[in-house]
Image (cartoon, rainbow, N blue to C red):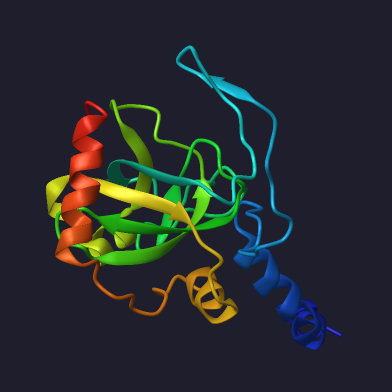
Length: 190
């Protein structure tokens, strides 16, 4: 039997293994909500961050976005995909789900936190992926005033976000509420 005939005979058995090996490309962690990782305290540029569960997390500050790191590994081991609706946060468990509201437009989206950051910029509380920044309507701005709060996203929304799709559309925040949130942010000095 020639070498080619032997290879042709075993090729069907090897095909699934070769496909799985190609998909693993870099040994990235599969996109999953389990296990949730909190992690130990860590230091970046002289500042110590202490990851913790905070079901009442509700902050005003600024969001920036990032997207040129596509393909890199996120802090929880997944592949960063710039078009997906994800974000980086300094201390929330990975993954977490947060609602991000633009204080300029009142548009609100849910994002999946799977990375660490932001580590630059006074008052920045979240780094959005390019896809999340586009979904929120702040990509052209570079950074924007936002409200970020932890939410218990529905399993349907979680499943969509784990596949890189946006969660269901959320209602706009009323103008009066936006004015109040802007005043609160201004009072913090940011």
